[in-house]
Image (cartoon, rainbow, N blue to C red; front, side, top):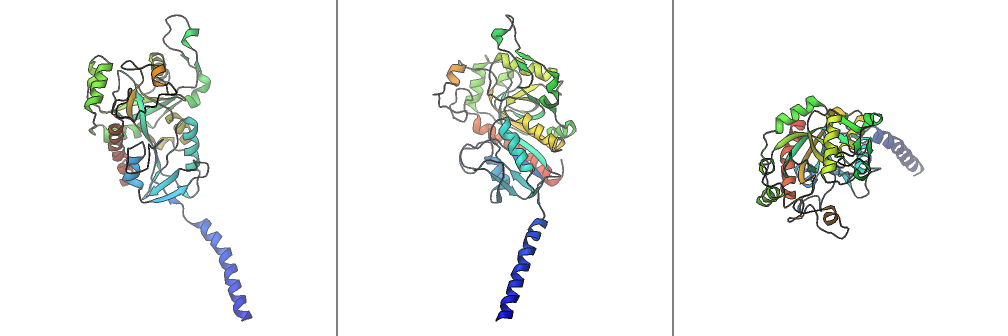
Length: 340
């Protein structure tokens, strides 16, 4: 009996010494594409879609789920067949921290992975319409530089932003243009949709202008990422000036709150050359149809962009999310089959 006990004890001790070494030597999970929506409206599947749902249902549903140290307590990294998806949270700080936490997790191998930032945004008037989908070729930080209130400037001033070259290493990121050309060539003819209500909403807002009443399409453009949700002619002029100042390859097209921060994080970790941004438009960068800052941003105003009767997005939100996935799916599939 003593010999049997001693033998069992030796086996247990051997297992205790071998198992940690085995765990440490386990191969990290190879990721081919990391998809980064910013929020989800409700559940990850089966209800009204936010930015994540179509991608989750299309690629990650039924896969593995991982807690991410340094991520959000309730968010998981979903992984299936080489595709990973993480809901980053909104804003530049949240997204940069989320991406860094995911990429630094040693359980995964991102050495050859592409990063796909996806979500909704506000498009620049006279360039985009609600429902458009954009392949973004450059990302600008709206908040780096200097801003003044228009009331502090000479009468008639249009722009309120002043360039500071000291921020240039972070304030604008030009994406891999060869990659952007390949992405755009794959998706430029994808058919995207609008709704009758949204079309009428745009026509009323911009006096039936030809640019405002066209069908939605897939376009290239520059995005301007702000720490705040802005609208209006002055900030539109600022965004145009920034795009020209930084000599971006395509016009100002969108404003959102995350993409330049993701670009900086990706660059720090050597992945900027594999960073792709696919955004859809669910509203415009100016006030429309009688809306004002006071009416849209009153703390007691409960209506959401995702409402089917939104005073700033009409009923385009769900359709725009579907448009985004139609385009993004082409890109993800090309990454997975090695054709990108």
